[in-house]
Length: 574
Image 1 (cartoon, rainbow, N blue to C red):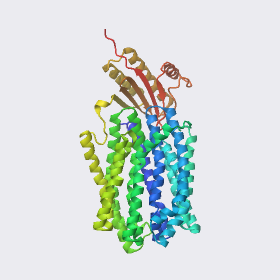
Image 2: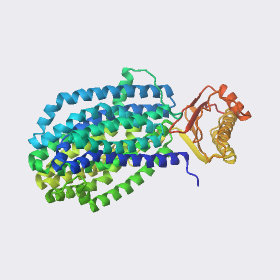
Image 3: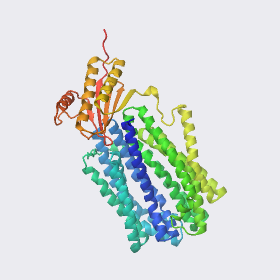
């Protein structure tokens, strides 16, 4: 049985995004691992004190990236090409401005931030030395994050993965070489340089034919507001994490001493392990936005159901592996002291129990940041990353000591998941979580998936005719739709000789009739009435397009996506 176009893209994007998420997680560990093995344990603890700044940097970058990308994919879902390009351009401008502002801010708050941590001279010295070149990381990271996400959203999965590979290799090689000459300063500088190199690789996408995004300088307060409102929901977890991390660092130092900071560094990295499931969220977001724009709830449920199953399997596997290899994970950070190694191993084991609930919440959070309601996404983030961690973690630490911290961190996502489900069922009723979709509010939408062969195209045409007849659409409209579907899809076959293609045909009945045709053949604008005519079929399609004004072509996820609107004229039987 041939996979549907949706399934093929979902599997492809899930695989690439999951690999990318693993690479991103490995990158987040890299500096600590290099520092622990090339310098010492206390250096790991010193750099760990800068975790709140790192979270805040990512928050600012994701505020713009999530806001601009979500606005872009919503416009793409509704076939508004120029508006999508305007958001793309605004994303570039705001990312550059954010990098400059963060760069200036880190210089301004350096003494105040390091002073707040109240650390001794050794730990402070390591943190201060790493901080010196960390400012260059914050300068380039917002632009890097935005371009990387834009390239993935445009369906260039290979270049997206290549950028991660280049960053990993570049960071490892440059950091190790510079560490020999500059110490811990060289490691933070190596991170900044590797990001720049990876950004250069990503920029190659915009020279390729499949690039869908182009500059459109329409800067406005309305777009800035839209980016901000769409971005805050998706990035607020990072802000909450930065706040909680800042308080946790201070609490840990005051109650357990700086000698134990390497344990905190390992525990902090383990809490970020759940970010490997961001790959699933990243994969579903553009697909969810596209099918939400078509009101195709059947596809939405398929996408989320598929992703939830994989999140469940992956989280259980990750928990088991973390428990089995807890000592090896702790040793990876260069920890050699038996007491510290035992404490770090214990933290790894306890925190691993959070992965199942956290992966589920991340996936649902990604869904609602893509299609709304945004306040619900913000609610999930606030109870998961701020309210419950503060209410539970420090209370348990007072009773059970250091282990209480890790137990509190593990319980927070579980309690957040329970509270979220109960709240939604009370407010909206049973059966809607986590989609919050209502049948009465959704137009009648029908989809058919098939491999592109002449026989299957005829079957699709007959299926479309049957639907239109059932809705009592006029014979003239039915004839028009039949002709368009058959000739457009046959032209796609003609343009892709010898290829095994997949297509999707969707009909949405509301105030008018929306016909959407997708295929994974070579990219070309079939709606262009001035297309090069190389056959009788191409001439026929060009003639149809010339006389059908309500049409739009939009390359989405490296697939052809063409939409046509027809008036909903009912057959007059009188």
